[in-house]
Image (cartoon, rainbow, N blue to C red):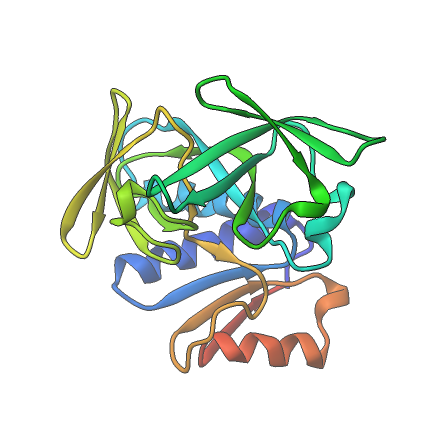
Length: 239
């Protein structure tokens, strides 16, 4: 138990880096998107100290998936200006990408702009399951970083849930290693990737491996602790 959250996260990150360097299976977990990003920063620093991440960070544009279901897909509140929408064009065999330029408060119509600057108006009531929605983000990556793919990339050579490592980044391209093969992805367009270090409590399902969980005092409950056991056999709690 450690009262200072910064010290808590530093201890967790150091143990994570040691386990990864030793080749052990380990996952870090904390509740909340903001805390996941903070803990990721600590882990990346620890991996740098271990020599697992090298070189300068390069900031790339990314797209983070927004979960759509039959209810929120039809709600105007789901959509914000600047978000990105994609739809597979079966006739032309390509993925169309559109940016939401305006959300019509009165009309419930989205004004979409594609990469060529062309506009299209889309009624929210007519958005179906062929559409995907994303939030634009930025991500700092460097050689050695582990990334998780969140959607189809590199003309289908990368698929959602693939785990890749950064080999190099620069000159408009990031080189990613997947199962021993190098895949080059164009970073002039936002990529569907995120860091693969931290997840929500109990997210992954694994019978073995270590779980390093950062919990608040309020989260020290039986239901939360039982959730953690889904993700591994050796549970370490930092609270």
